[in-house]
Length: 64
View 1 (spheres, rainbow, N blue to C red):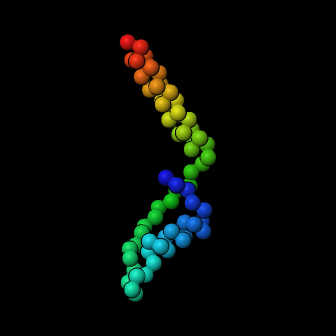
View 2 (cartoon, rainbow, N blue to C red):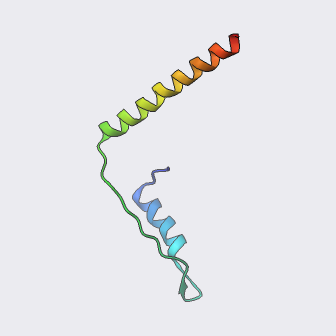
View 3 (tube, rainbow, N blue to C red):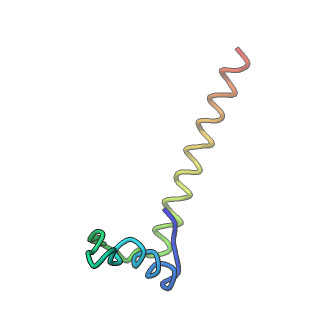
């Protein structure tokens, strides 16, 4: 996922949904949800911990 600034986001939407030869290209439904920063930090830190565990297992298998 890429987070864009509002202006860039609107420009990209206009490219996708803008009219071509008098007809609209496509319609897009967007659902956005507010998320607290703490929730994002918690999710990313949990993923990092899981990745570290996986690398340790791989290293143990390499020694055998």
